[in-house]
Length: 502
Ligand code: HXC
Image (cartoon, rainbow, N blue to C red; front, side, top):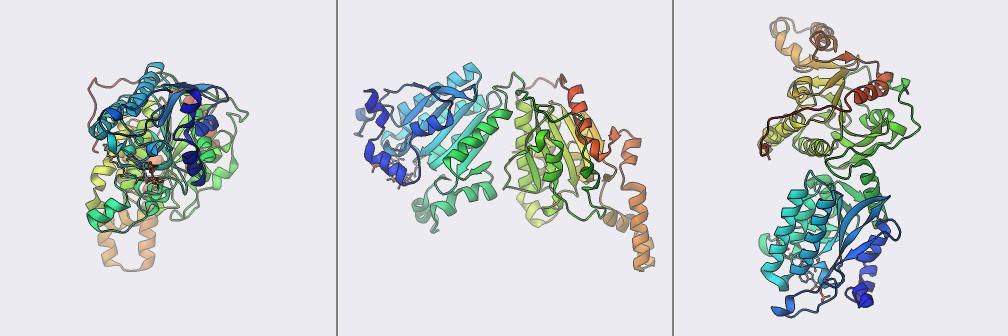
């Protein structure tokens, strides 16, 4: 019976799976977990579908579930077995997943889903839909309590997509994975569009346009490396701190290159990723959502051995302006960090929210305010460094003092203002500029404004920033701040939940 269960849908289907460049559920589990650590549950579960309609039944019912360890840390998981009815989800299949989700919650450990499924099992009708609903309910209960990670290793069709979307991180694999609520045939029939699986829901679509996927892996091996790395930053659950991983990077390390990383011309871009990684332990920045909304950067790193969540504007894309997607991206990341006790370090260089009809009609007001909401709501330690521009509403949004960041620093190149010198001079010196059209006058007035207002000292005079840092010493100062705030406690009014502007 054991051997039969291990075979899933049989050798022919296993061969088909390999031909498609995919591994079987058990092969995947073996690759992901520490050797010999997997304990399988419910291996002999069978579908009850024969009571309603005939299907060939297989032990395990198309999903392998259980627990094991990854680099010594316990996790629970499921792996869809595509060799059994295309990994489609029926009643017992759903019950198996629900059981391990419940156990992961009770044990307070991360939950991982290895997805490869044709969606709701057609032969099991509404039972399949009910089973999905039970999973969605558990995804919701687990959200913010244990980390939930979804690997997409094949098709992820219909109902199968919503559970991953409700988890914290989605990783898709190049060439073999896709996610869609209705496949190409239904799309053709319903709206007359011709589209391939890849165009409809391939990794490029979800990593660059829809934002559903946080990572694109080059292979299944690479996907599992991403999961291992991701887990290394995370606490097991929301009641503990993330692990400290000691390293040899000194907390006092300074880096002179930071003193000149910001170009003197404030309209010139520079690479914020370089700035961020220069400051982090061993220059190791693990970026999340790197291909979506690259005008903002989010990801994990370590400072002093402890996990930090980084949020930073990227002046190399759209001058770092905030738009709909970047607001959504950063807000979700901030809320994850806040739920899991991960301090947030923000680097600001933002000219404002993106103007224009497309953004306004797309709902920049609604989406942009999520970022404000997320920062205001977060009670983990929050440290903000204004590197260059912090203009207008975007200044408020990017972890500003009165959105309740704990410590706010600025570099000497910082400009905290309602808008940039060019725009501001045009408004406040309008009469002078109308009377005198000379370019020299305009330049003089812009410079006058810049000298007066576009520096960190007016904000420092009023305590809106707490100090002006020498860039080279940023790492040292941020670590000092993090140590100081390590046991920060901030209470908020008791409520059922807030109502973020979704
Ligand atoms: C039952 C299914 C199935 C399903 C696939 N199979 N999907 N069986 N229910 N949903 C079976 C196939 O009949 C086949 O069985 C085997 O799995 C492998 O499928 P193939 O089509 O041969 O594989 P492939 O060419 O790789 O294509 C995979 C696929 C395709 C892209 C997933 O099968 C497909 O498009 N399936 C339907 C996807 C879909 O529309 N799902 C939505 C369901 S509705 P044999 O015996 O021939 O090997 C839904 C709503 C839930 O999910 C809403 C909840 C909120």
